[in-house]
Length: 211
Image (cartoon, rainbow, N blue to C red; front, side, top):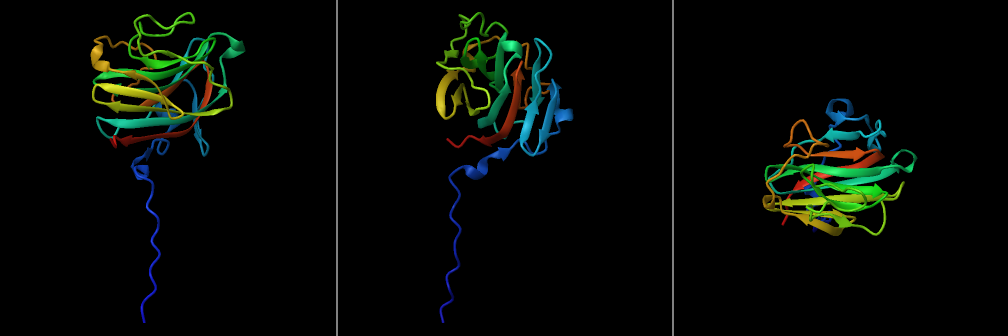
């Protein structure tokens, strides 16, 4: 008699197994750089910090020089009483430069890369010397889940929101590197942060570049 065929499990989607879950192993008290952080079964959260302060937490280093880093997050609360600006960001290192992929919201809404204190959003307009800033038609909504994703490659970093390419940054085109805020203790690690907002991160993962 012929033995029955053994069922074969379907192959996982290409690249799916390459992602490393950065939420595993996080100790919110140990890894927090600024602000109050909590981790539980639903993810990683930061509280709204005191006025003019940020929330920052370190993750592990990326697995390779070229990699993808993504975060699924929900803004549960915007800045106090509607003043000022809110921000959610992914913090990383590219070509030796400490930088962040920042999503601003509330009074105005821009998405872009920040690597120097002179390259930030001011007074409802982009800094004139930050070519990566892209003004968006709508703000980040409270209680809506988004996915921010960066692709770090040699001499080029791409930033996405919900699968849509928003902006690009070529770190070798700039010599300045003084980010001032959202600085990690170990600049070779990855991190996430928020400014004047209560945010929950339900997914944080990284993988080596697949293309």
